Image (cartoon, rainbow, N blue to C red; front, top):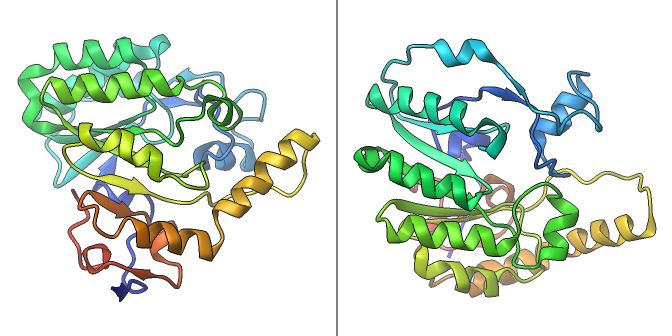
Length: 265
């Protein structure tokens, strides 16, 4: 075990060299979303309007060229049924140019099924990274109110894996105090890596006792003691990676997780 505290790559750069988004807002309306927080802070959106997705039509006509490194699509919104065709168009343009694309999504099964079938010829250029933060639908409904339930996300992961696509998972933020039972469910269907991160943004004013209870649970999840216990228990799981939110803590992390590791996996 080594202390991983230096040269920490942050944010989306941990996963890709660049990113593409074509929509402002996201109907998944996740409470912890950084893009949501920034849009509200700089008055581009409000808490009420963030879930109203607005398409940037100019992005649809861009003739994308091949970029150096991998592209993450999308990062500040998701691929939802409302804008499936537009997202598929941009994805095809990226892939036609020979780009390697990391598709990040809280997956809707019908979208993943159509995507796998429509882009089979680009399989070598695609890796999925499905965000699956809990297997408890009550918890998911609070934190990610507009996103698909656990069973649909797991079904999507299984399907993409069965179609021989490269599959990975993001458990950021981990919403269960002990994410290991979730990891054990997902592990057989992940061909690449499973990334774990903690919640970074916790507000201080609450609208109800129920809301306060959910936030207090997350604070328990994020204690140094709990995270160190998780890291220790997962030390033999080869596919596990830790996001910057964990790696920047003063923890002992297995040497495979040190900053010198190849983060593009």
